Image (cartoon, rainbow, N blue to C red; front, side):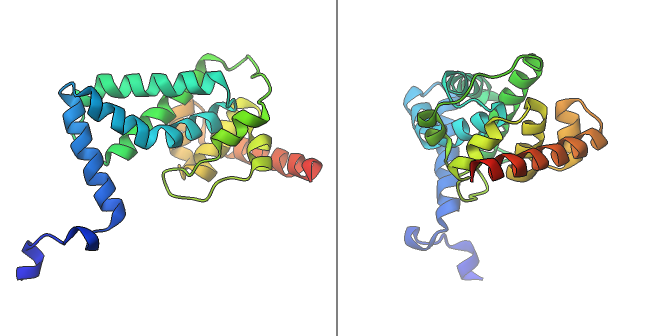
Amino acid sequence: MLMSTMPLPQDLQDPAQAAAEEDAALARRAAVADVRAFEQLYRRHHRRIHGVIARLVGHAGERAEDLTQEAFVRAWQALPAFRFESAVSTWLHRLAVNTALMELRSRRSRPWPEDDDEALESVATPDTAGRAMLGRDLERAVATLPPRARAVLVLHDVEGWKHEEIATELGMAVGSSKAQLHRARGLLRTRIGVMA
């Protein structure tokens, strides 16, 4: 009984839990206009946020960086209303995904320019679930997929969303989400085979 009320020593605390608590403390300070606290949150999460945005929009260059900055501006503006019902990292990740999805909706008919190798290397960072980095060839192949197929593939296979969630976010039927995923996987198999 006594152990359940005593806090764990720092060296016995789960590193993920400690990071979540530190993020929450930084977010609380940033919510009351502490710029330094927000800068720390930015430094802690920038690479992961940029990675998910770049995967979704298929462009790892300037536009992905612009969208990353836009996501953090939105975070700064929304922090005072954040209720801490989820981890700060989860909230930032969802905000980044929504920022990328809004970009995809606004640019449905326009193709993306080709990605350069240097920019693609910067995308290869772990995602929120702590999965291993996608390989450089796979990243390149994903970036060449049509935007809706790429978005469905990334949201389903990388981010772990269900087809119902994807359909709602992208404004499509569940069957269309499944068809886009099947299409994306087929295109990837073909493109990776060509790259090998």
